[in-house]
Image (cartoon, rainbow, N blue to C red; front, top):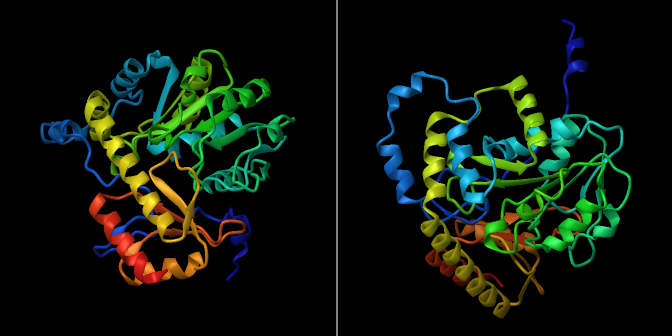
Length: 350
């Protein structure tokens, strides 16, 4: 039988997420929030009228966009929501990166960028970060088809200033610049203050990290109304009904509970700084983190060996067997108890 159809299959190297073990472990490998979402989220779901599940959700996601608009001081026309920031970024790639010129992003960053570029057949060029894993903004002062970078960056945890971001946006008026701020709530300052000044800037954030709602898959982008309309045109050409009813409902309640949000972020940041000091006492060196994880290397013990030894103790961290970072571990910040168990395990390993 002929298998000529195989030549028409689109072949890509997929994104590889962190391992999701099926048994109970100390899970510090996927940058989830160790704390539950706001009680207002739980209460809203208890009161959720399941009868509405027989109906399609609002394709405009207006209720959630209104809450986000009020919270950040924008119009609903400036806000796009999707199924996690991955969905939002995917739509943005399809919408804005259609030039014959390559898009630019760092060589060490969120690995989904190259996956989307390959999938959508977008030419791209990876720009090397420097020896301290920092983005060199001058490398982006060139002709291109668009720019995307995470700030703070992942997996390096490093954050650049708003002035740094503005320089890149200002130097590229003919291209859309996407700033992926999945971790911005844990350190640094958001570039949202630049949105009204630059019509080529799109800022993307998520509920998965600081708002403890990775399981509900909510992400959003904020930019000028023309950018958002273009994204919606693409979205409505693929799948009008993206966010489900319960996510729209619970997402709004999460944003309203600002006090809980800020207290949870503070707990994670406090734990992060305490653990960083403990790791340094054990011979680790960490980049300056503005995220809910630490990017750490040990002075003498190879990262791959530490990764496997921790796994044997049912402690999962993330190891990237990739050039330049193959001797680093990315360690998500868990509860204080989980991090204490990590430190005790590391004492026996290193």
